[in-house]
Length: 317
Image (cartoon, rainbow, N blue to C red; front, side):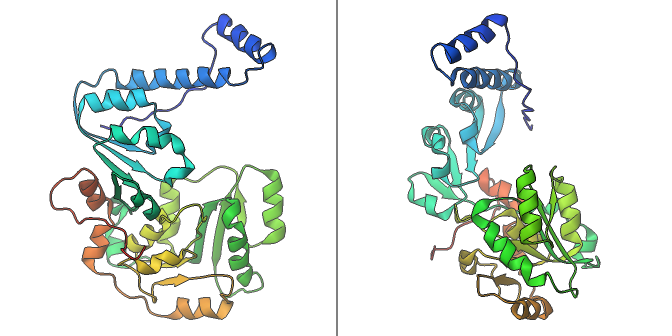
């Protein structure tokens, strides 16, 4: 059973609360009271969603730092196995440390976080349910040579500009680079710094993303340097048999790394290196490694079910 919390727009439940917030803000200079009311408002939504569940075999929390501890405890009390996956570096969201002990199994995305007691390794995955007979038979004819879809993150934007400016005066390749941002200022910056990149205000759906992945030869991934975990783009490349270009140097230590399939780039990478990589034949990944990083195996490993392939980080990291 999936529990989806579609957060409702906050509203004051009474004029008294509205006036109390106004008093605390103007007279007491307390600008946090409204945030407290927002938190209570969200907590009540969680409680309403979980109220009818009597018993469950498993509970999986992704980014458990955003869930109230009271809700995690409530779910744990009616669940056989309660599991968490912190899909980001632990230190970026310190609220997670007060929640870790509430879980039976606690998985981390960043290899550096394995230094913390009680953590288990876990990468992202590709959804093998999205694979079709065409992908398995390599019958789809790509119409995009190089694909990048991402949000504006300041820590990696210089890498993005540098890479795609390699192609600004070239017409040989079909490039599709999309950055999502709500800032008109950043839209202007992107257009000035790298005209080959397009921008969108609203995000795209997962299925729209996968459709573009299917129609591409190469996926591009840029590290944001705030953690050392691998993005979904890496595993989509594995699942959908695509080459990968990435700034993530640690990827070289993983069992799926093959230089014919993955090009690690930096500030010295030039156009000819990229073209040489694109023209080289792709190497087949073993079926065991491909199955290892599928969602079907991922969920068995996370829930400690039978017949899974363990997902570990490279020892060298």
